[in-house]
Each structure stands twice: as structure tokens, then as C-alpha cells.
Image (cartoon, rainbow, N blue to C red; front, side, top):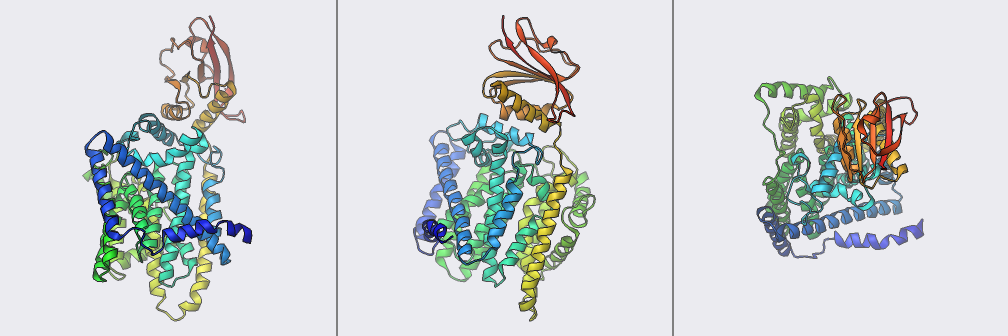
Length: 572
């Protein structure tokens, strides 16, 4: 163990130097650099040509620095804890890793989300090959393209596979959870709360069924909560003293909240308030250097978020007046009462409701009042906003899961401040922390396995798995081909979404069962036909096409979803 730890001393020392109190850049130079980046960002949206390209490369360089710093922070903290024989963080690293990565890419464990496939396919086809990677543009149905640069990297490096489709979202969520823990632990340490309370705060987030349910979609829905955990972790780490390198780190991740999936704008707005309050506090303490550094982070974050409104078309917050009150009432019933579906465990809901009562009446401070009002605003807009389609508020409440890490931190921080006033807390607190951590871990495990019990692969998962296996065995997966699909087993959109991502060179022809037959395939390309088992393939084939068809099942156990599959080639 000692030899292994010595091998990592260099990265740890580099991390220490990177985030030390030393001044690698004077604060005025950092402000000047941020001003240049802000002007570059503005020019990228207002002009064409070199500015968007330069801005995208500068942003990418900051992103590499961010994830490098985050990785070094996590690794350095883990090794430091192991040297001190502290295993709390190590347990979280392993447990969260199992929860997120176990059987990733396995259709029997989690779905292959066709919307996620469509989103990445759209970005890989229309954005990534542009000189600026579509840096200021939009991708899938008008969402900012920039957010997909990060999650598309595994597919760009390793190919369009099921695992890499999901891996980008998984690693972002995983690293966010660990970063959030380290930030909360540091913040609680300054208030003399033990690290078990930080662990309990993080574990509480995973007791929410909504989080677990939508985590395994591995789709842009989880980007806001993942980015919030990243941003909140670094914010808490920098709250005592912001250093010049952390200005760029914090500004980059908070700015990304303003250019991600629409609910992320709520968190972006909250961080503008946080930055302002920290600047006011630094001004009262006459810490000029800190004022300049926090203003630098605030300026970049604000500029990036505001510039995104120049091109984004996904912001549709205005609700229909007739549905506003009803939607809010339904959302509050789900949120606090768990009716008709559970948002959080009932016991936890009691503590959350008490927190709201204390916060909204001003009993626990101005910042907690602001966050409580923000929570209610997020719940309201999540339930009532029109979006692209008007859904049931019970469903659209998934937009609000980004508030969960902030809410758990605010909630338990408030209770700890109250309990610390009692003399008995010094002895009872650590024991209670252990009990609550075990209870939260048990609750999170229960939610995890309940989700597993309720999940089963549907016909669309079997369809893409079947087609991938057949295409690989025939050697046509990565070659131009034509697919004709005419089946009731799978609807149009999953086939189209899967096809765009997994078979980017294929021509997809998805026909309703009662539509005319496709009769003019390109003769130089193989032809794959999947239909319901009773539909004969001869109706699709002009003269000169040969091959065989078979009645088989999409289910690998050959029990469900019968189809007729055929592979044909032109042979005059």
C-alpha cells in the first residue's frame, strides 16, 4: 500500500500547488483574462469566422483544465484519506461507482434511450464537424449544442456503441456526486460538522425515486443535476478563499449551466445570486483581492449564460393560465405528499416541509429564504411550463430534480446549526450521524432495487440489440446499407433515433403496416428488411435481389416479439 501511495505523490503535490493560496496570477491579471474571454464569447455569437472557432477552443481548453482539476481533486482526496486511514470517501467512491456503472450498456439493466441516441446523432452529424463544433448553435430540437460536446466525447473516441452512448452521462453524474461530497465535507468542516454529515447529505440525494428513475435514462435530463453537483462542490471548496485557478474552474462549470438543458438555467440564475452575495460579503470584509476574483467568476458566468439566449430556442417558460394553478397544486402534492407518485421518502418529506416553514418565515437566515423561494419557483416552472409539449405535471416534475442537491445541503445545514446549540449534541451527534447514514444508504439501496424490479427491456431495446447483433455478424454494421422496417412491434421514433446513432451510414425507411411497399433500393448496398412475421418480403424486392428470410424473435430467449428478418443483395 505504501509503494502505491508514493506513486501518486506527484499528482497530489501538483493538485496542492494548483489550488494553494499562492498567486500564480495576480487577481487583476485574472480579471483582465476574464474580460478577454467575455469579449471573445460575445463576438462568437455576434460574428462568424474566426471568433467562434477561437472561442470554442478556449472553452475546450478550460474544460480540459476543469476535468483535469476535478479528477486530481478526487484522486488526491481519496489517497489523502487512505493515508489517514479514513474510509468514508472511499466507500462513497465504490458505492456510487457500482450504482452508476454496474452493467452499463446492458439492456436488461437499463434502457437504451432513443432520445439520447437522437440527441447525440444530431450533434455528431450536424455540429461536431463544423469548424467551431456548433459552439454557439443549437442541436436536438433547439437545445444548446455545447452541452453535447462533453457527452459525445466517448462516442467520438470509441465509436457509436451502447456503452459509449451512456458513458458520457454516467461519468459526468458520477464525478459530480463525488465533487459535491468533497465540497460539502469542506464546508461542514469549517462549521465543525463531521464528515459523516456530508456523507448523509449526499446519500439523501439518492433516496429520491425521481433521481434514480431518470438517472438511468442516461439522457440530457440528468445533465442539470450533474452540473449542479459539480458547481456546488467547487463553490463550497472556494467559499472561504477563491484562488486565481479556481476562478476559471468555477466560472467554466457555472457557465455551462447556462448553456445546458433548459432546467439548468434555474441553477445558473441561483449561482448569480450566490456570487453577488459572496461579493457583498467580501466587500464588507474589505478583501479587495477576493472581490476582484469573485467578480471575475461572476462576469464570465453571467456573460456565457446571457449570450446563449441569442441562439437558443428552447426556453418556453410561459404556462397556460388555465393550467397554472392546477399544475402547481398537483406538483406540490407530489413533492410533499407523494401523491399520486412518490417524489421523496415520506420521513424525509417531513423534514423538508419543516425546513420550508423555517426558511420562508425568515427563522434561519436570508440565504435560506432565497433558496426556499428558488425551490418553489423551480417546482412551479417544472410543473407549469409549456415546454415543447404539454405533459402531466406529475411527469414534468422531473425537471425539478436539479434542486435536490441544493435542497439537501440547505436542509441539513440548517438543522445542524440548530442542533449544535444543545450541549448533548457533542456526544449524540456522531452517533446519530452513523445511524442516519446507514438509514439513507438502506433507503437509497431500496429505491435502486425497486427501480430494477419495475424495469424490463421493451420491444425497442430488443429491436436495437437484435439489429446490432445481426449487422455485426453480417459485417455491414459500419457500411452503407438500407433498412426497411414495417412492424407493429416498435414505433417509428425509436427505430429512427437508434438508426441515426448506431447506423449513421444506413438509409432508414420506416413504413406503416398499411403503406405502399418500397420498391427501388440502391443496388450497390445490402438491403435489410424487418417486418411483422406475417408480411412477405417478396413485395419489397424488385427483380435481381436475392437472399433469405426467417421468422425469428427480437427477444434473445425467442419467446416474444416475433418478426420476419431478411438480408438481401443485388445479384443480377
